[in-house]
Amino acid sequence: MRYIAGGGERLECPYCKTKCLVSPSGALVRQEALKELDFAASLAPPKPRSVACGGCGANIVLPLQASSLPCPYCQNVLVAQSAMANNGSAPSALIPLQVDAAEAQHMFLEWLKSTPADVAQRQKAKRLAPVYFPYWTFDARVSGTYCVRIEREGENGRTETSTCTDSISKHFDDVLVPASESVPHALLYGLEPWHLDKLEPYRVEFVTGVPIENASLDLSRGRQLLEERIRQKTEDAIRKIPGVDDAKITSMDIQLDDVKFRHILLPLWVGSVERGDKEYPFVINGRSAEVRGEVPIAARDIVSLIVTLLKYALLIYLGFKVLGFLLFR
Image (tube, rainbow, N blue to C red; front, side, top):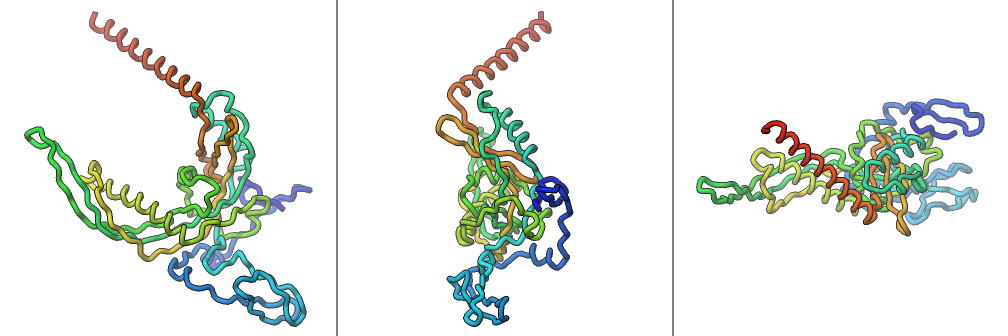
């Protein structure tokens, strides 16, 4: 059976085309899958793993570096669930793929038409394929201080400068950090928001026929990327404070506390377009069909765009001239 993207969470047999619904998760399973883990506790030394032998029933402790081991009593091969690492690296939840291949191809072509790329680039995407992409999702409480410089024009016409220092305390929920660098993070951030209320507990039924990319960035690196995102989001929050929106932030000293995380999978369609010997990647949100990518633009594309803009500017200028002549003749 294969999962049908956009098929209302259904499975289909590729041979006889029989379809069936994915069975819903129980409340306890869902609660366990969607709960957030403590970041500090996840960095503690891993505990030994024990595996029950399916042959003789013995409970054998596996070395931390081993993923399989013969049972010393019956020689049955014991296999540890290596994906279930002690640092929480196993995906606990995912958003099911909703965009099928036809819609992904259509959205890519529509997006490409809106770019300055020439007609020759408006073609089928190269290697357009679905993938469940690994993400860390973090919760964190941020506290600290910031200083801003405010410049205003005084009564004498001179610019007056003042500084303001204040504290900030804010809670951030479900900040997404990609757990792999196979796709440029700037493109992935452009696909947000993901509406994580659509998360489902991880089940094999959802990923049949769709590749899963493993998390190649560990939690420590994820925490570093989280701090970068949190810093930017904190600056955005400060600029929304009345009276500070047009000020320059000169310093900011913040710290993250009570950090919690989850490892989840989000559905993407990935592909690329070519210009010459270089490939330009693009990604499609497998839930909303939002597209982001790097577009190959040649020099003639830029010249064509400038010429087009000049034509419009000339038409607008002539229009105002004609309007002025008719009104004031």
